[in-house]
View 1 (spheres, one colour):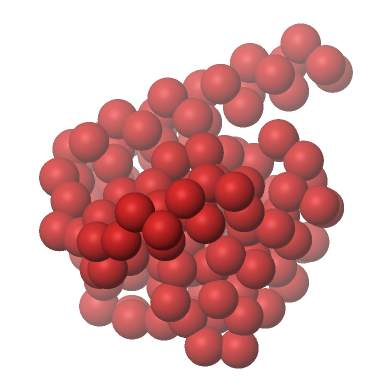
View 2 (view 1 turned 90 degrees about the vertical axis):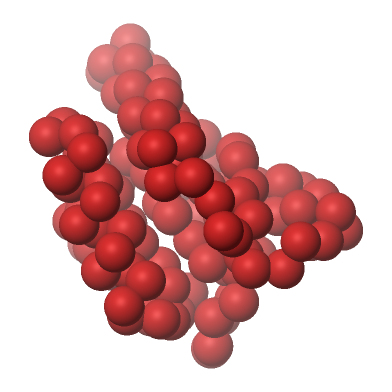
Length: 132
């Protein structure tokens, strides 16, 4: 099973992503959801995940800061995919510099997202198995 954290301040979009991912691949399980980066960090401390899907624009702590915090606290153990509705090369570069493995711009193809989650999740599980 690939354990997923969804961090997005828009609940209906989180629900769409959760429903799609869990239906599209039975190995994918959304185990934590947060509406801001601070809450996402609290969830990560108590329940580790393989992949975090993070909206860039959130209140309290945005997705860029959340990426930096995840990299500082968990290193490469967590795969990070960020997304936003703003098609900005500068924002994409900032997301990748902040620690994201991949960055998507809305509207994006959900099957491409699913494939990216599976690939990142599998790579994190292989690393965890070889280390442990």
